[in-house]
Image 1 (spheres, rainbow, N blue to C red):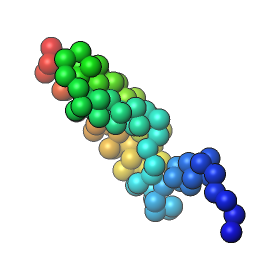
Image 2 (image 1 turned 90 degrees about the horizontal axis):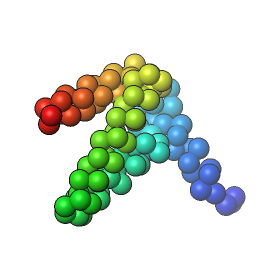
Image 3 (image 1 turned 30 degrees about the vertical axis):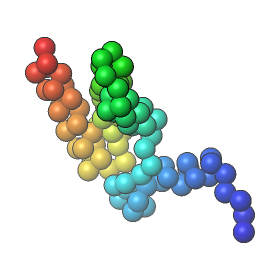
Length: 95
């Protein structure tokens, strides 16, 4: 049996499931950043909490933009556009 490298696992995860109409795939860097920001916001208070929320928002917005513009299929593009609209609406409400 062949040893599997981290790069091999990353490539497999990026292929998505199911292969003919990918809905689920391993998170890409902007989404990983968003999750990290969410974890920071949940674990911290004060300035670190605010920084975590900002990191989450930016990471999620970048991910949503990439999906809306260049998603694998219509469902992924629609999901990206919906999350982008939700993010903008949430930020607008906070002003």
